[in-house]
Length: 389
Image (cartoon, rainbow, N blue to C red; front, side, top):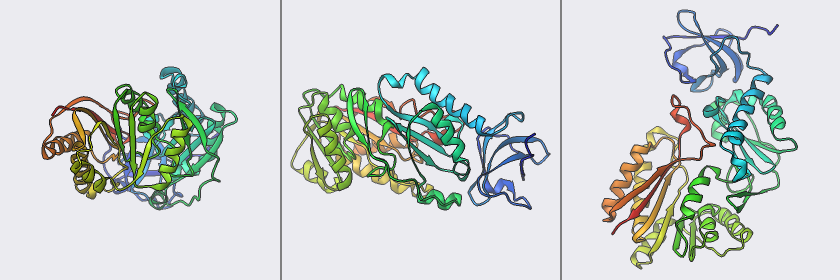
């Protein structure tokens, strides 16, 4: 028999199917479970609501994992959930046919709130966003080992997450980078290097789609990071590719990625704002321009300043697109909605005095699913346009 779990009770009626219950709705238990403990959750009238992680130190006090009272959250439960997530990628999406790099677990999208796992060949990168997932990490590792025998592991949690969730984790020893392939293009994924997970697998389908439009074209990849869009473009026959980023470390990886594919890309270390102003003044125009900046904010109070920065950079980027050229612009700031991003783009085009025709609006690849009742797992906005004049 399993021992009864600690219980927590809610102060108000709960009618939501969202897995997050915030601190202000939860009565603090007399004997407080440690952050990340498994608990049973009961409503104000005593009815059982669900089973999940409790964290009295976090703004998200409860993360519901299970709504079936007969289902025990244990090592076997994690094994089943992770097997289902892998099955989606392998059997339904058939990602192994196009890449050996994909997201294995996408937090709430796979019913595992607070956990993200990425695969890069034989390397699994495990990121903890909650004290609960960190607390039961050995169950997670065991479940992943069943799905990926012989895999190497790298685990970490960002410092701000550890503070919010009240746990300490220095991360595991830095692994050797992994060389991965997607749609025939090779990349070096280094989670201990410039980017926290080693590579942006979420842009896989966007890279592939755009790369089919660039043969014989002059391409500018702004905020190029480790060179994903630019290297794809050159492999697919672009005449010239220029990649611009302010980070010297990511440009070093980008140059290595170009070399891996035996292509020549000109990478420039620069702040894109003055660089674009100079390019615009010189009428240095490109057939295809890509703008993929880093996340602007995690703070709801900073969404308006973030949108202003998006507006400024998109306006400048539109100024270097040839008439009739393609413009691909992205936002990975989850707090900025698709509607807000498209409205920003409308205003950027107005201020740049350009007419844009939207061809395609998309997001992250299908290995980054989100539940209709948990929009927080949806973060990437991708807009592909023609600049008509």
